Amino acid sequence: MRNPHNDPVAVSNKSVRPERSRGTHPRRVSTSLDTNGERDRQPERTCVLTRRKGSRDELIRLALGPDGTVAPDIRARALGRGAWVSVGRAELDEAIANGKLKAALQRAFKSAQVSLPADLGERTQAALRQAALNRLGMETRAGNLINGSDKVEAAARSGKARLLIHAADASEDGRKRLDQAWRVGGGTSRGVIFPEERTILSLALGRENVVHIALIEPAAAARVSHALARWRAFIDPEAGLEGGDSALGTGSAAEVEGTE
Image 1 (cartoon, rainbow, N blue to C red):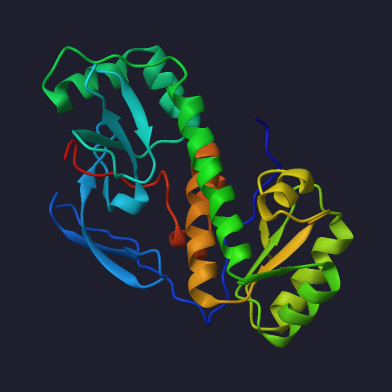
Image 2: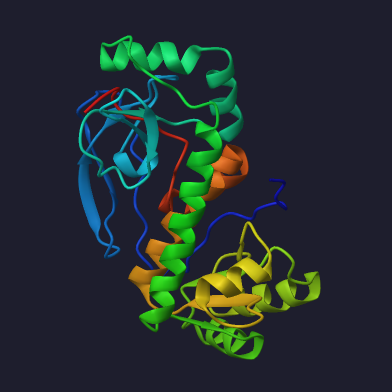
């Protein structure tokens, strides 16, 4: 899937931001956001491919099923053994094709009985996408976001918006106008470009013709930022992680200890 250039995930300076861990010890405790937007202390893990370290929220867990099949475990809740990766889609697909990922997982799981689906990268991207769409739907039902250009502009300009998001096919003029209002209200330089067009954004929210949205509750903004950043970082690690605010969700820049 070819995506437009993604701007850095950004939340106004009123919302909570986690700190990206920088330690090297495999059990070093790092800080991330829990589902309520609060800081949560987590032990580090290590990527089986790159050996880089990070918290659970900064990696993607791969779970080993009873039959030896490996599957993405985006929420890191599947029973049994798991291994962690920190790479994006392109690098993961390459590691699958050349056998490096299978060899790394065999070492991590201490078993030769590892079945690696050829479409694991596609499945992982689809799971991250669905997690982001589900999160937007939940925040909509909770009343934590608004849409409609005029409403979003008013919220952004008044400082009530904590996260600004544009559909991929939003007009340049519309984005610039709302980005300007976002800056006036104390936000960052520009809003987030959603990886897909308004049709998908509208379906996620259960509303019609959604082009721009604003999260108006700090913890909700942090949760959505985290889900979007993990998805975007897997699609394109450099674009998904550029800028300080992208630390709200790091789906593929850090990694964690081989198994758990």
